[in-house]
Length: 455
Image 1 (spheres, rainbow, N blue to C red):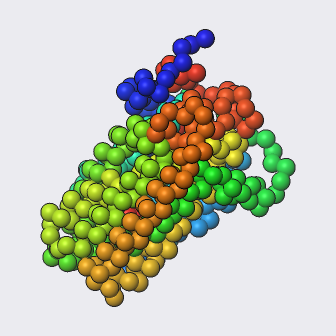
Image 2: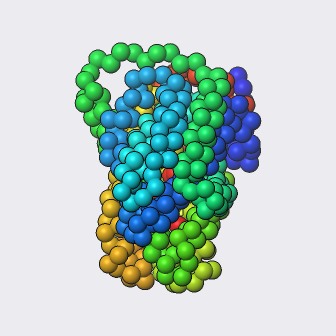
Image 3: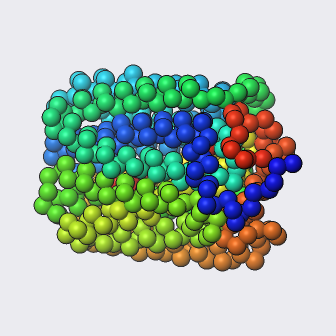
């Protein structure tokens, strides 16, 4: 029998072990490639609409169109439990790649509707893609390394904000929005090729016995009744509600600083730098603090950062953007890792998508509310109010973590995410967790978010 890896020895080399695994590395490469195009288009679409219409509210509706499909997340995510997940990832990448070139037709306020239509489909494909990716990673990556994998995924995705927004802004300034759309389409094609290179062995899922509505409800019931997943997902939803309002205010903040709309790219890059940092430390932080305390620390940092953005100074805005990037992903990483640990494999697509809906539907509502409020309430009043709500959320999460400390299972190391690292919710061989991994094991083993809060 291979020697047991302890919680004491695991953290030091955990990230390196994730990167040495071929499939995990291909996952992360696909995230980098598609994340570059997505980050460039995210910025360019808002600037494009702002330039054509002069409206901050319409520019914010670009983000609303992207996140609106999260309203149907449980139903869309059920697709990931009905078909093999690798082909689904490829299809979910190729669909937006085929649609993005149609944005060459957008050139005036009267022709904006194709942009919003494409963004809606883009968002729906993203919901399916995220559910399939989360489910496949959970049975490919060693359970004790899922926090590290999710942190590195955040680092890869958010790291693109360091280079993609300036590149997208430069490309937009030189050749316009259609050129950025074409770049994004090319990155999706390359990401599809990377997913095709994954060495996974997936058996066709069994034919479902229940109706689609009952299968979707089954995932929702499991998530809602689970004492570890539910508090993190609810805290994440409250955080993302505030993040949506914060994201809708980005162009108002830029206006208050006296810059052109393209200055949002600099704030976006600062946010990416913060997210890169938190992604690198997420795995060790989850093991040391536990999921709820890690999430609470991130929400508290986000509260301070959002409040500070009300100050009309470039240096403060850039530092606040970095702090937003560092604070917001914490609760998302903690919630996603809990879902992957605690959910039976055949339900992972539905439960992941349901969790994403509970996280991101409030973001859609926040974006809609922000689009309505940003032209009526100045940033120096709106942003501090958001900070107070976020601080209250962090306090509630800390209170739940303290209350749950007395009931932590025996054998949990200090600061573990409510259970021993080597004892995930469904260990190999237990009901609901596949006994055969669909890809090669991790070495030594017995897988945009925060885009919602544009800087």
